[in-house]
Length: 298
Image (cartoon, rainbow, N blue to C red; front, side):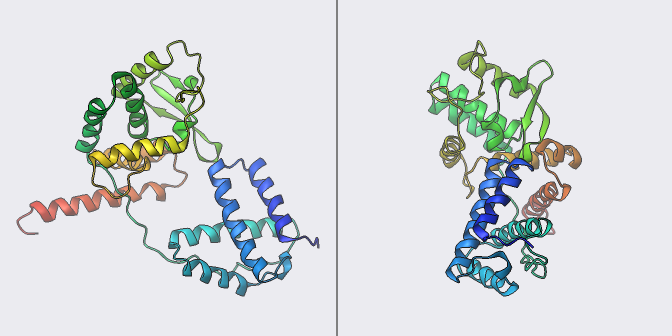
């Protein structure tokens, strides 16, 4: 059996998941953070080799994560990362048994995502018209229109190229999680917003990134987050003011209007239907609130 230090093994592991599984940059960074945190924990206990790791060490690591007030969701993610790492070690003959085999994820009740009302989304566009000059408002509007109208993730929006948009077929080719491509339809209202933006910012199609900054470099996630947070802070009282709220709103509003759950799953690019089903719970909670507020027997 091959003997190797944990930190050397981790680099081999990262190399595999980056080059073979072709994970997104964000997912890869998440794996790296989780593994490095575990390695730091082991180093404090003078554990340097993979065969020295026992089940009790992982349980102690979980206690440390719990004491640091990490959410159960985050702790579950750490465990999933470690499972993947130890599986890599087993199939490559670095260890015979996984020390994490008998450890279960913490049970947790999944939080329902916050969402916007349809009226709130309309208020966003009125706010943009009053806040920005005409040219800049077209850029801001297209960001919100793609995050809500096409239910894109922030990274998907940032990675969008001008050639990914097919006006004739009214569709966008999106590079999603795990480098998987999907086709997302564009509504007529979104088409108008996109055309306005392209006419103003890229009429010749010379600049490849669909969204770009003053240096003609691709707009990044932080720029999108800052913009969306600033605008949502002015038009909504929801607690979490991130771009992902617009994606949640799109899915919830489609479900409220009797869209097929499978169709929503494909639109959002979810791998499992269980991920999409969270929006059915959001709609049910909204129905309960409406019932309590309006029904005389509530």
